[in-house]
Image (cartoon, rainbow, N blue to C red; front, side, top):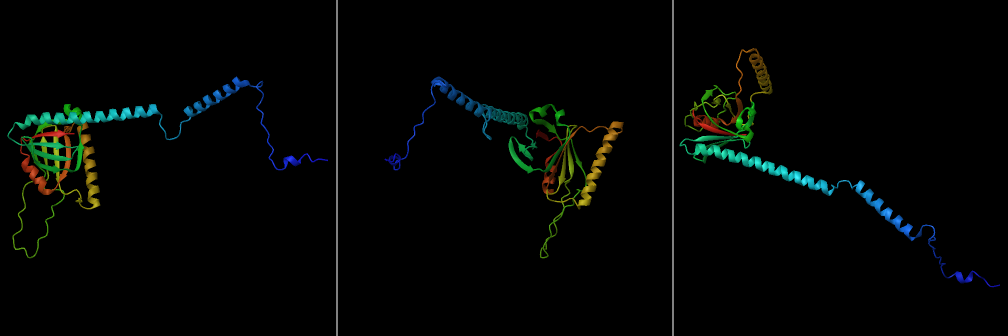
Length: 267
C-alpha cells in the first residue's frame, strides 16, 4: 500500500491565501476603505501635533511680533537720540559748558561745544518723583534745566578715611579740601540732584545705624505726607535723583556745576 505522505516529507507545504470574494466588498469598496483610513490618519495628525513643535502659522506670527517689537525699540532709541541732539544744538553755540545726565547709562557728562570734557559714573542711582509731570518725559529726554542753587549739606554721612602715611615720610600732611562733597544741586522747582560722597562698597556704619537711618527716613516721609495733607507744609513736587560719587569727584562736580549751568536729562 503506497504511502501518500512520503512526497510531502522533503518539501514545505505551500498554501495559497485566497482573497475574499469580490462579492463581499468589491474593488470599489476596498479602495474606499483605504481612502477613509488615510483621511482619518491625516485628521489625527492635524488634531494632535507633536509636543514641542509650533505650527507654521504660529511660528510666523511670533516672528512678526518679535520683528515689530525690535522696530519699536529701535524707533524709541532713535527718537531719544534725536531729541538729545536737538537739545544739545541749542547749547553748543554757547561758550560755557553744559551737563548731560544720562540715567540709562548711569553717567554724568560735562561737555563744551559738543566735545566731552569729563564723565563720571554714578553709583547707587535712585530716582524719586513723578517724571510723567514733565511734558518732555514722553520722548525720554527732558530739559534743558539750569542750576539755580547749590545747597551745602555739611559733613557727609560717612567720614572720609585718609590713607595712612609712612613713618619715613617727612612731608607735612595734605591739607583737607574745604570744597563741599555732600550737597544738593537744585534746578528750579523741577529737579534736585542729591550727591552723596563715598564708594559704592563703603558701609554707612554698622547694620544698626543703617536700620535706624532707614526707619528715620520712613518716619520723616510719613510726617511730611501728614503735614502736606493738613496744610502745614508745601508739597515738594521736584524730582529727586540721588547718586553716590567718590569724595574727589563729588568736589570736582560741585566746583564745575556753577549757578546757571545748563543740563539735559536723559531718562
